[in-house]
Image (cartoon, rainbow, N blue to C red; front, side):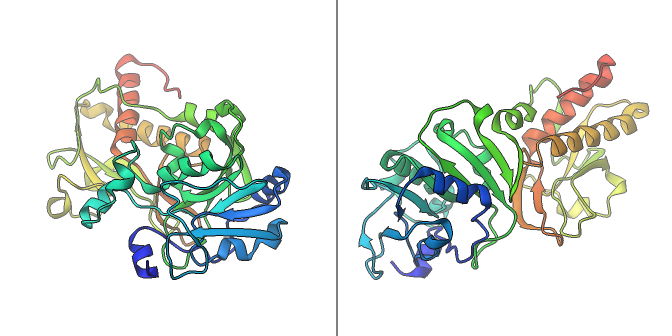
Length: 333
């Protein structure tokens, strides 16, 4: 398989050391493993720097027969190696994207409930080895992946470790020990932010008890749903005429970056509703260190990960504010 095909399949090459944060090095060293093992070795960059994380012996596998590694399809099975820790960057490719590209990956997806190759890869890795370090999409944090209970930590990377994509990623460390989410640490770069249980508790879900219509040209409420790169313009709720945006020509059923919302709020309560939606949104962002919001491609000019507000969370925010105004109650997370 050529490199261009591997990129088409979602295999991006990690060339830097941005992913190797202090807590990741500490995890690798405390595993006591003496072999760095990459079942998706590709160009071998993660193994080439093994001395930086204190391991001398390396073993790589890859499906590409043109490379120097032992040939193996690690999405099907990964051989166990004694005293080895997996350190890898598996392929990322959603089932929907594969279908759109007319790629037949049925041998992987037909036997799995997952919708992305990297989740299948995680299962194969956890089956093979106790200790696993993997660079995967940051959206993993908000996934329902069944084996999160074996995590030791998640590290969000705002620095880009790739040369061929700016896909938002994180580093996950698995230690094979089942634990509660309150014992799983979440970092942003080199800084500890919170445990996974606390972050999960900040996530709010809609109850669908309020009539809310998105992408409705008749709506009065505008939502900018994506952070800009300028470090000044962020996700926000506001009256539609407060935005310098061509609603008439740009809002479609598929719109996700801007939307117009129709929700029945008395005119004298609309400003209060807008203010409280923004207050609740900002509270969620601060308390979760932004991890509850969807990571968006690229960073701001200051290197901060851009975020997107999906309609599920937007609905949950508006429902909670609506009910607080109707019932004259405080808003809580």
